[in-house]
Image (cartoon, rainbow, N blue to C red; front, side, top):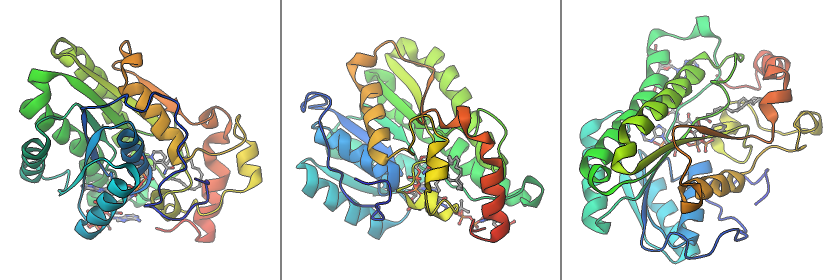
Length: 289
Ligand SMILES: CC/C=C\C/C=C\C/C=C\C/C=C\C/C=C\C/C=C\C=C\C(=O)SCCNC(=O)CCNC(=O)[C@H](O)C(C)(C)COP(=O)(O)OP(=O)(O)OC[C@H]1O[C@@H](n2cnc3c(N)ncnc32)[C@H](O)[C@@H]1OP(=O)(O)O
Ligand SMILES: NC(=O)C1=CN([C@@H]2O[C@H](COP(=O)(O)OP(=O)(O)OC[C@H]3O[C@@H](n4cnc5c(N)ncnc54)[C@H](OP(=O)(O)O)[C@@H]3O)[C@@H](O)[C@H]2O)C=CC1
């Protein structure tokens, strides 16, 4: 799959790095799994024989994505409609998942909302909305899956963060604050839930250009100047993130809990805080508000 691929529901040309039956008999619940990075995470889990639930708000898109994932991988994919801000919808969705598959071994929290905005330009409701989707939403789903299944059976939780919480960035206070909250919850839950045989991790992508989430923030084109500033000389792909996640959920990663794997090719170390680039995009109107 190329970094410029525009189809959110495009299956990847997957190359197996792990044994194909790595996750046989397991079930994953993936929020945000109908699109972008989390669609490909679901795909890669399914290629390793995991059945999957994908959860988000837009029902038509969920159904189409579930069909595409089943067609491409030969595994079962259950679409469930829910808003991560609404505990009663999450409870119904998790009940449906458990009725259908009887278990949830892996939880991927990828649902998120974001846009570019100067901090002072955020309305109170805009800040609250992003905190509610990303931080509260991640807590809500973890709590329900823990209570209804993982507390008694163990499992692995992977929260998708970003590199925004590592340092200051332009126009991203709201998303950075929310991702920081997720990383902190991850540490606390790794400590509290370790005794229940639950590992809790974060995977933090840098820029992944082949997603609607990236394009809608203004990152429509990836030019060579931008990529040359990244140590590995390219932005990430959805498959790069899926490959990181499958390692984290596998038994090869049994010692990993309460920490973050930054999957960004070294972007945050060298990218001058994106200060000039984001400022330029924002001022030119290319970065949509
Ligand atoms: C990602 C690339 C970044 C920049 C690209 C540029 C250059 C590249 C350079 C550098 C890249 C460097 C690093 C990048 C690395 C990572 C980026 C990190 C994270 C990326 C995260 C994502 O991609 S998250 C996924 C994005 N996808 C989505 O957001 C889809 C879901 N989105 C939504 O549902 C909505 O957009 C929503 C989040 C607003 C929520 O919708 P809803 O609940 O319906 O809320 P509303 O009622 O619409 O709005 C609530 C309040 O928020 C205000 N609002 C809404 N939009 C904006 C906006 N654009 N600006 C300011 N305020 C906004 C709205 O007005 C409401 O407030 P009121 O006071 O008016 O009520
Ligand atoms: N693309 C990038 O460069 C980077 C992305 N990330 C992170 O990766 C993850 C995936 O991002 P990406 O693939 O780019 O973005 P997408 O916009 O494709 O994915 C966001 C998903 O979240 C779902 N979602 C949003 N709000 C809610 C809600 N309230 N309840 C349930 N589901 C919701 C959306 O579905 P629906 O609207 O139907 O509900 C959508 O499927 C996010 O956590 C993002 O922050 C991190 C760093 C960089």
